[in-house]
Image (cartoon, rainbow, N blue to C red; front, side):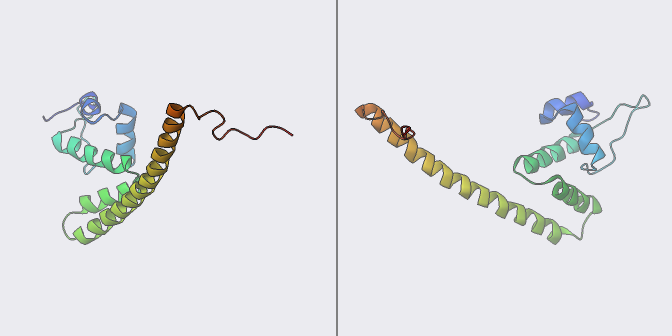
Length: 135
């Protein structure tokens, strides 16, 4: 899957053409994307795999600046693996904290769903958390 067009890559990654151009402008690729004589970008499978990772990092809340830093470290080659690991571990901690927060919220919502469901089934839902009547 070499010599992919920007449309091919958009389809393969789920990223729009504008997003791909943004990624290139923000230097999120591991290499300069070559172009045809007519100026069309030419991607390869390694670009797609990298973009899928970057997309997953962004989808999980990693800031663009951190993705840029990670890309910069990878582009630099061997010797900075400990820095890459530290960056990824920090993001992993952040994601786990967000998951914990979402899990706590989900537990509360589940409880409320159960309460409302029970009251509806029992016919006692009328007035459940209704605003106080005006004085």
